[in-house]
Amino acid sequence: MQNDKVEKVGVIGLGIIGSRIAEVLRESGRQVYVWSRTPTPEPNFLSSPAEMAELTDCIQIFVANGEALVEVVSSMKDSLSKRHTIINNSTADPDSVVEAFQIAKDAGATFLDAPFTGSKAAAEKGALVYYVGGDPAALDTSRSLLEASSKEILYVGRVGEATVLKLATNMISAATVEILSEALGLVTAAGIDPAKLSEAIEQNACGSTLTSMKLPTMITSDFEPHFSLKHMFKDAQYALNLGKRLGIELPALSTTASVMFRTMQKGHADDDYSVLAAKYQSKEAKAAKTKKS
Image (cartoon, rainbow, N blue to C red; front, side, top):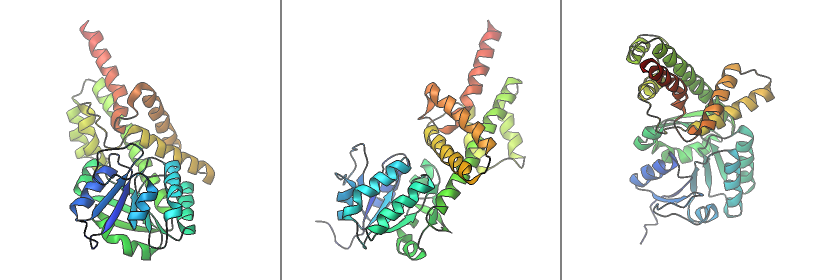
């Protein structure tokens, strides 16, 4: 028999992050219900988002894109009411976030725009950082739920604004990994031990948490996905489209997106986005092979 006093929450989307958030919430003592397009052997896997709305009051959504976000919220709308809080944790386009917000609002539910920063390891440790847009009172009500999987919650303003900030930070991450890949390619082509690049960056202002995370795995060609290339490319497209609409040129991101697209065409869509370095490593391998022969 379930305890009615136990908080019942929902998680939609069981990818790299969503599946780990569901586990963190279980460990926090909550009753967690889950759903994703692909059925998985997770406890309390439900038949639909609508069923989840019937069983829970607060639902976190981790889906791939804006289209999926709108589809999920639309499928729940007839089951939503004033008791519900919908928390979008997906990185989507701002228009889709606002559309999902309006659907929830029309049904009487509360909606928070709360994309996050943090990879697989951070999700496992409950150490994500949420950027939150929406009614501050709704955030107060949902804060304890978000705190279970985060180390920081940054309130930024209206629905949609948190998503724009998330896209902006992903622009920086994408361009950083691309130029880091180029630097690694240049160093290795010059015959320098790539470990020396790591040492140099550690003593240089260009070093960051991101470079210290990504460079070691790039050197060893370990592209296990913590944040997939296809998702970073999707976010770049959202940012480029927003920039076009606002009349802002984004040449660095445009170039990086082109490289990401070509890398995806070579079969790397599901690899970590640091797989951009593979282009330079393959050249190095070919050069070494030619030298030996």
